[in-house]
Structures are given as structure tokens and as C-alpha cells.
Length: 386
Length: 185
Image (cartoon, rainbow over all chains, first blue to last red; front, side, top):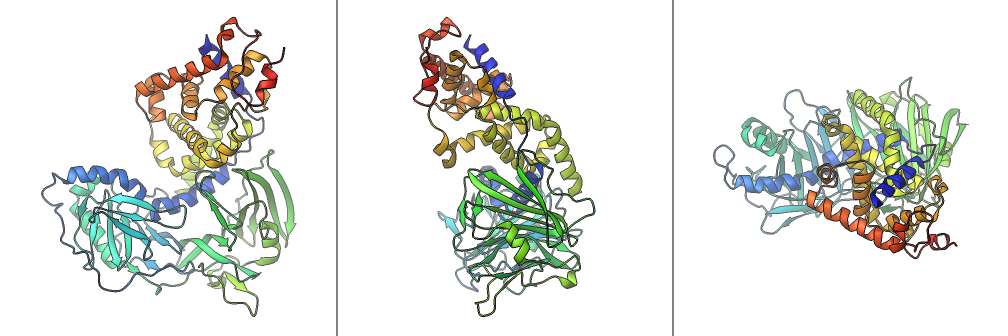
């Protein structure tokens, strides 16, 4: 009896779905991409947890080519950086297997990542590097916990000690190699194999992983990122943060980043990524002739207007109870520009940012800038997240 | 290749969006929140698209993502702040406006998220116990017990008058907004 009533009720509720969808597939796609960048590379340790648990069991009976290494836990040598500047990659591959090349990377004060190979299938090598003090061994070197700017961080159990990397401790943890790249700093290399057992049986891939780790360069001596747009006339309290970049020809082109200030606040429980309020998200990259902003959504408050000669769409929405404003320009000086900001009382709106503060630099890499944020004369230099 | 991945994803979402929105509306009992839920679930689906498209049943995969997102959101603080006991949204479904239906809706509204999801999977999606267990990530036994508890809670909330059928006087489920309506003579 009650079951049939429930069926009837549920059918009614299903029929009550709003006639006009507010769901924005393009937004899901953009956020999904952003999430992949951080989660699949920098935060690769999350899935490691389960795999490592299996690894710990399997390795107890492993014999043969997958034997423990002998790397000592070292307390000497150079210190890892305390934080990373988001304007430079901070980390670079010194060696990659044949056919692999740098595809993309990301950097924020607490951590940085690099991804090589095919971004489309996410099957390449990925390395996440954590600044000093953000990772801690658990127990007597049985695992590692890393904390990072949200969303981020991971915890993993080591499966087995790996051969030392430049004399420093290294461990296999599922299909990952985790090692101390400098005193107080840890790195996590995600290895493109289907499973831990596949890695176990593939000594060539193990050797490649160790070689990548040994040649990885961490530090400030990497070329600065280039930005196809520049923010001008903002106060010195603003900082560029969470920069994602793409290897574009010979340049490392920043294509998405966050602009934060002292009042920016992270809400981890909104959506599946969490959101920053009072912190505009920028997504800027060369556009294509057919590019469009996300499809017209009748349930969203959209307005189209022309700003600085460019056609833009401005949307007002809510996400998790937070007002959300978005400005999208599909063809702004041959660039695709999307600015999203959450929060009830943002310090500066997306329209004002686009109208007064964003200088678009076109698609010629020679015109791009290494200084995406310039401050007014007399103010302290900004641009690096603190 | 990235473009084809995205195109494939967009094509899938365009085809399945109506059914995902309907399922979300049943889970949330709030068309507005339902779209937020679908929005969040689609982001997750994109992240796991490689796995979803390789799955034997991509629809089942998408449904699982949606249901998990529903249960996760229900645990988060911002939802708790607005999810009042006995709350029933003002949605077009309320057009079928008789006390029994409202009481049933209110009774279901106060169920814990997992129990509600179980009922939706069993009686809206018509999944058997094993499939339901796969979606919820629990054992078939847990599905059975969750279903039994949920049905018992609903019966208890509706009270003995429930079996008298629609239109008969009945007690309400909780202390929320619905009390005035369901106590109408």
C-alpha cells in the first residue's frame, strides 16, 4: 500500500522538476577541468590510499624484482622551499620517457604539479610537489600526510621502500612513487599504469619513475609563466593564486587563476569543489572562431552587453546559497575570457574587473606578460600570494 | 582529443539531463536545489568521464554519482542550515493538494538522506536490492534494513489513520510548515 503511494509521490515530484533547467553544462565542464588539474595531478595521493592498502598486503609476500630499496631517511641537505610563488612553475621535469612531454601544470603557495603526456586521457606522468612543512610522516615512516591549500592534501600508506632518490627516502605507494625531494619537502609521482600489480611486474616503468624523480628540478630557477592578460590599477592587497598553465609552444601560458585578497574565504562544502568568495576566478585563453559562452539558460539572469568593444554575457546565479556572478566573453581580442566570483558583497565585481582593470594582450606570445598584476605607483609590488 | 572527450561528455549530458533532473527532483523534493545537485554531479561526472564512458552502464554510473552527491550534500553544513524538520517545498508537485499526499511527502522529507535515497532507488528507479546496493555502496542486507526502517518511519509518521486512505483525517509527520495544512479540517 505505502509502496504504491510512494511510487505515485515520486512520480509527482519528478514531474515537478522545474520546466527551465538552470543546469549549466559548460560550467560543469570548466569546473570539472579545474578539478582534474588539481586532483589528478597535485592531489594524486587521494586514490593512492586505497591502492596503498592493497599494496601493503600484496608486498608482504612479494619477492623478485620488486624488492625494497635501501634509501636512508635523511635529515641533512638543502631545505625545500617554504612556499611557492604562483608566478613561476617552481618545478620542472629534467627527464621524461620517450614520447612524453610537459602538458600542463599548476602552482599555488602550498604545492605545485606538472603533468606530462596526453591531457585528454589523463594517462601521463604527473608529479605533485609540496612546500616545506606541508607533509608529515605518519608513524615510523609507514605513511605520509600532506596538507595543502583547499581543495587539496592527501594521506597515504607506504607499500614498500623504493630505491633512494638522490640519497633521500623514497617509497612505493600503490602506483605512485613518493620521495623526499629536499629537507622537509615531499613529492608524489603518479605512474601511468593500470594497477599496482602492473607496476610490480614492470621493472622498466619502475626505472623510468625513479629516473623522472631523480631528474626533477624544484626551486625558483624556472622560467616565469606568461599571462595573456594583465590586471592593472588594483590595490596591493590583491594576489594572484592557484595558477594553472599549459605548455603552449615554447611558452608556459597561464590560463586560469584566482585573484585573492585578505577577505577571500574558502567554503569547502559548496558544490563538490568548494568555492572561494570575494576571489574572482579567471579563465583566459586563445579562443576559436566557433567558441561560445555557455548556452543560454532561461532560468539564469543573463544580460548581454558590450564592454570595451567586446560582446560579453553577464550572469547572476547562486551556488550553495552564495550569489555568483559570471562574465563571459567568447571573442575578446581573440581571447576567451571567463570571470566568476562568489559572495554577497564582493570587493570588486566581474564587470568592473573586465571594464576597468583587465588588459587583454592578444594571442601573440611575444605580447604576453610575466607580470599579470600591476599595482599603482607608490604601492608595494604585488602578484605573489602570501 | 580533449575536444572529442568534451564533445562526447556534452552529448551524453544533453541526452540524459532531463532524466537526471527528474531523479534529482525526487531526491531533493525541491526543483531549485535539484538543479544545484545536478550541477555538482555533472562536474563530478566530467572528472570521472573516462570511467563513466567505459562503464557497462554509463547511466547507472551517472545515477550513482548523483545519489552520492545528494547524500554528501545532505551532510554539509549549508544544507543543514536550510533543511528544516518537516519542511516541504513549494513546488508544482504540491498541486496534488490533499492531506494524505502532503503527509506522505512530509514523512518522506524528514527521513535521513540515505533512507530517502534507498526509497527513491527502490520505488522510483525500480532497482532491485542488489542494484540498489551497488549504487549506495553498501550490502544488500543494508538496503533491506534501510528500506524497512524508512517504510516503518513513514508508516509511524502517518499514523493509524493512514490506512483509511487518502482524504481521511491524518496526523502530520513533524513540526514544520506542513502542520497547518495537514491539520486542516
